[in-house]
Image (cartoon, rainbow, N blue to C red):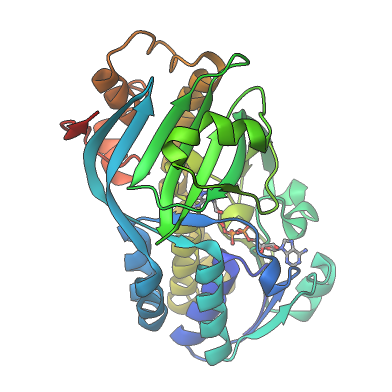
Length: 369
Ligand SMILES: Cc1cc2nc3c(=O)[nH]c(=O)nc-3n(C[C@H](O)[C@H](O)[C@H](O)COP(=O)(O)OP(=O)(O)OC[C@H]3O[C@@H](n4cnc5c(N)ncnc54)[C@H](O)[C@@H]3O)c2cc1C
């Protein structure tokens, strides 16, 4: 089979490598419009389930990734000058650059044709020349847009306003910092992804500039600088599609669906999609049956994760607007931590245990200062 993949993010590269590994040898060509060194972003969370998927699909990629994972098992809340820490299930995070470098390396070793720095040809040209076109070109997929009516695409901007930054410091674990300013509160979600690096994602309705953010988060940053890399204030784009395939085009990863960043699931969903699509292509008798089987396998888990993501986003939007966590006003910090972990009761402990970044039965506060 001749397969074209538009987009060399986690979904496209993982699919290409997994497809070549699974054999029989398909010809797989990937187009990625950015040069390797232009990759945006800092670290992404990879829960154990994502690493399991990677290990099942490509043990060598999992081995290559393992030494680069920053691992942590605590959640800390900094609020009103106090810090509370609770144990959390094990989570890992890795630099997005490193993840992509490893996946690109695996693609090269496995004979994937990678056009790095080249925008993909148009959808009509690809569908005519290839047996299968995998649209892995992200939340704003042009491949999908060319057939938007067929896919039944809906997109929606979700509050709160956010900016994705880094910091030259490894936070002790997953950390949530609420900082008050005269123009309103700012909330940082931070987690380490290297010995001296963290992702710091900030939400604030008044969109403070970097200088104000440095000032607001000076205490938890402990003298470290905030870093920018294509960072800009935005609102999360929620993507849904009525169907994930049309003819010989199939949607993968963020092109098919997005789930709010506050539950840290996007990369995991992308890897799971890639694995499921390769499995379906190998096990089903026809392309049509494989694409239907892929969607049937993935849609329930994706919609569940999107639902949790929306509940989480709504809770954080309340916090960013009011500083009170949507009714958390005046709560003792311990109660605030529980409210965060269950996102104000909108997310059950079962949901959290299965899916979310705050994947914690909100336990005992083990340290407090
Ligand atoms: C602020 C923020 C924080 C996040 N935090 C996390 C987190 O902690 N954990 C997590 O798991 N996920 C996180 N995510 C989500 C995660 O980044 C995505 O879900 C994940 O990268 C999806 O992978 P993808 O390959 O589907 O899409 P993308 O990573 O978006 O990759 C798509 C690729 O396609 C390329 N492309 C686009 N158009 C074309 C074209 N025409 N031709 C060729 N190439 C093209 C792009 O350059 C890009 O490299 C976060 C996202 C945001 C916005």
